[in-house]
Length: 121
Image (cartoon, rainbow, N blue to C red; front, side, top):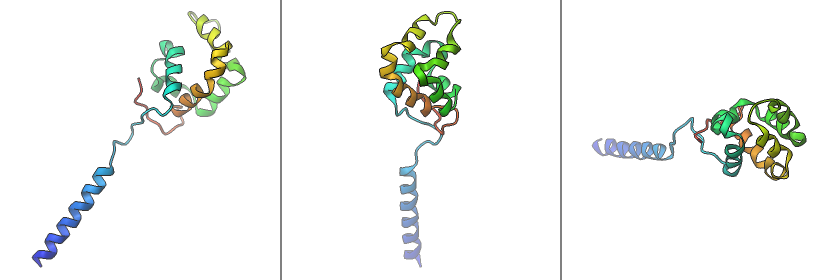
């Protein structure tokens, strides 16, 4: 009987250690689209803060719509605001055309309807 208890304790200890080894903090998300994050921080972070705030301003589909058609809707939202000339030039330029897919993936990664709880700054 004593050997059975010892074996049971060893198996239970092994199972618990395996379940803890696989455990990771829940509710945290490490950025997958790091290049898109860089684009966001360079173009948008000055006004909209870190990606965890900026990405969360819209849903994934809303971000897709905002960045489509050469970001026409996003430009319209920013026109008339102070200190946005550089941003509008970026959105209308060839650099945005090259970067917008990765920027979109980053914004969708942290959109308010995603399951990501960002840890990026």
